[in-house]
View 1 (tube, helix red, strand yellow):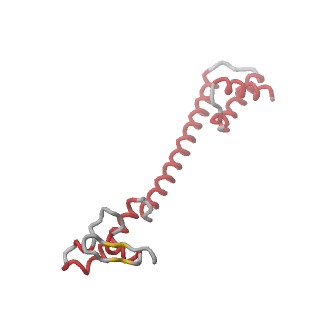
View 2: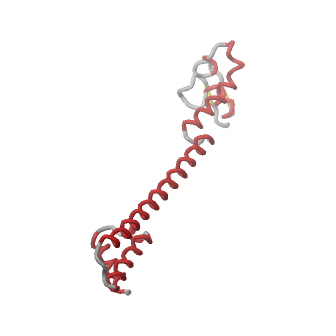
Length: 145
């Protein structure tokens, strides 16, 4: 004998899960169909469909919510990239201004500074976790010259 569901309100027995879901609803918090007024009986299927839609909405698996979340994530990603580009541009402009404001430097000093700025602009510094790593990376760039 297969699985059965019995309603203790009306003593009805359901042998299919579909029929049981129609009568009981999607979870234990729904009012069983037998407790709904007889005049509302023809609305049971409609109510159950609305309950399922509401449950999907609550689980955030609803298509509209997924599309909204995807759009929000894409917008945040674009905003972050633009912010990083703006920061890099600001660093580059500050470097150019510093070259104008300070006394001339030797070609060797210029190579080291250019290497450091190139390293910063490459974004590799984002992988560093502390100041010691940054100093070691800059020294390595200087030794390559």
